[in-house]
Image (cartoon, rainbow, N blue to C red; front, side):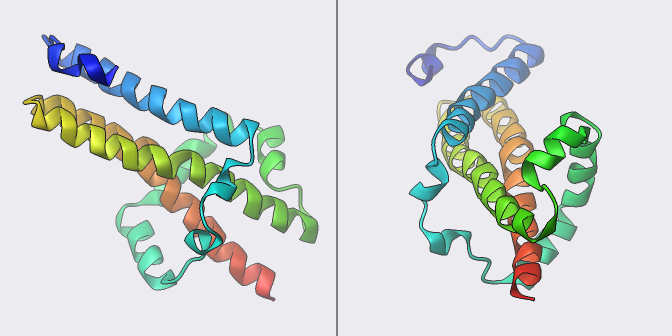
Length: 163
C-alpha cells in the first residue's frame, strides 16, 4: 500500500478520510490479529510494561480526557458482560488475567501507533499534508488513547496487586 502512496489521487476530503481510516485499520488489524493468535505481547521487554512515573501518566490521562474515550468504548462493543468478563473474571485470580489482557491490548496498539505515526510523516513528506494529518489524528484516537488507557489500568492494577 505504501509503495503506491506517491501516486495517490486525493481528490476529496471524504476520500482522504476513508484512506486514512483504511491505513489505520490495516496496520492496526495486523497487530490485533497477531496478539490474539500468539502471545505477541511477550516480544516487548517486561520493563516496557512497568509504569515508572504514575503522576505523569495520571496527568496525561486527565489532560487528554481518556476517561471520555473509555466511556465511549463502554457504550459500544465493550458494553457486553461477556466481553468484560474476558478481561476480568473477578476475584484475585482475575487480577493477573486483567494484567495479561491489558498487555495484549497495549501491544496491539503501541506498535501500530509508532508505525502509523511514521507513515503519517511519510505522507506529509510526500506533500499530502492533510492526508498525513488525518492519518495521524485517527492513529492518536485509535491507538494512542488505547495505549494510555491500558497503561492507566495497569498502574491502578499494580496498586491492587501490591496490597
